Structures are given as structure tokens and as C-alpha cells.
Figure 1: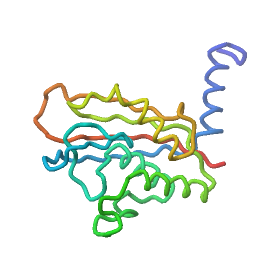
Figure 2: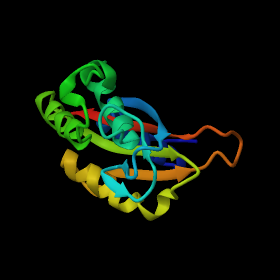
Figure 3: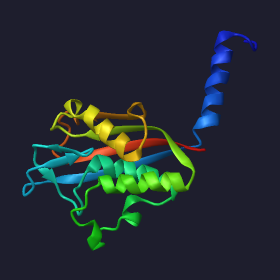
Figure 4: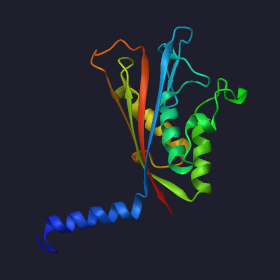
Length: 176
């Protein structure tokens, strides 16, 4: 292959894009067990008529995974280090406030989000019917385009009886 070949030009263009825009890829994780005393599940800022999750705040496992990834990429800290469980201010706190903190942190550090990709693992509820609203909620809280956020659901296909929701998040960040 020689410069000028379509494949070589495509590789050069992709490589240039990644060098120019993505300066850091960060990973976030969270999980919460179901809680029989809560009758509302909060996921991605959506209130869902489903058994809720145990947690100090509203236990929004999706938002927590996104915040964990952003904090890791910008501060090199986890969500538990910044929003401590033993801090009374975080008791029953709306997790969207954590995203607002991240939005301000990104601005202060002259960093922007290239994309956010999240996977929620649970048997119920089915995520597909809520994913668009979750993307909108996250993008609005971070003041980014909705097209930069993707949320998908997966099941464990009955491989275990773990009664919880798990979420993974990958965030591409770039210095302005």
C-alpha cells in the first residue's frame, strides 16, 4: 500500500482523528442490589415503576458509573472518594447533582466529552424502552449533545441469580 490508497488514507484519517480529539478514555463501574423497601427504580434519571435499589443516594447505578468514569479521567479519583457514603449530604441525594458537579469539573479543567457508552446489565426492567430518555437526561445534565451518549441494556441470560443491576461506562475525554 502507498500513500494515496483509499485504505491507507482511511487509516491516516482515523489515526489523526483519535490523536486530535480523544486524549483519554476512562472506565466507570457501579452495581447496586435490589431493595424490597423501595418501589421506584431510578436509572439514568428516569423514575421507573420497578423495585428500587439499595444505596446511600438515589442508587442510580447508571449515573454512578458515568460519574465514576468522568472523575477517574479528570481527577484520577473514584465516585466513592469524591461523594463519600459517610457524608450525610449524600443521603438520598439525586445523582443528577453528581453529573452537574462533573459538568462544572470538566469546564474548570478545560476538558470536553467526546462520547459516553454505557451498558446496563439486568434481567428486568428492559432497558431499551428507557434508553433514549436516559441519554437525554445525561446529555442535558452534562450540557452535551444527546448523540454523544449511548445506553444499552444486556441480560445475564439466566447465568446467575444475582439480584442486582450492574453498569459499565466508558467515556472519551479531550482537552480543549
